[in-house]
Length: 245
Image (cartoon, rainbow, N blue to C red; front, side):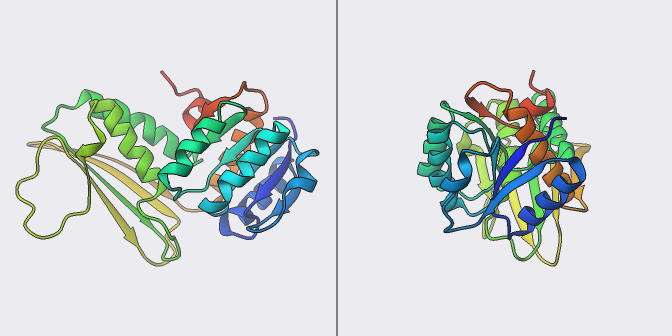
């Protein structure tokens, strides 16, 4: 893996600190660090790629700068409004952009297997997704849980209207075409995700548990290195890992 000069946005956060530590282990250079409110302009000319793990409102302005300077971008920030998501997708046509809710190699294998399982198992296998994170996480469901929902939707070829976020009250019987999504928060949990397919006489569970943020940081830097060799376009970690069918 070649050494890359990284402009890191969100350096003071938990993931930012993990990326700095990962870069020290892997030989990457954190060329510059910025946080919410900082001007990235002085550092854009000299960097090879931009890694954003900041706050959802900061992503779009930074990406506009990345397009201006023609720099690849890796986005790990979650919680964007739909209008911002649409604009990010549009700008990605101009620069290589890796956008993922989770950069762990194991989680992305989970995404791949979830889509396969959803396609193979019949509608009588009811999909439910649970995720748990530390008490400081501000958005729900997690970006990874949203990616898992997309994997089930793709495997089943269902519409987004089949997604049900939590349940309360007299909900009636569960329809076959429904994806239940449940967010748990507490303690210092780094991240746990489970996709459960509950069938009539058995259930299949796919689970990933993160023990350390280094797995996300290592994956983000791997994505940054990969992005510098790609054509403009929107990619995810399945592309980076070669798991796309």
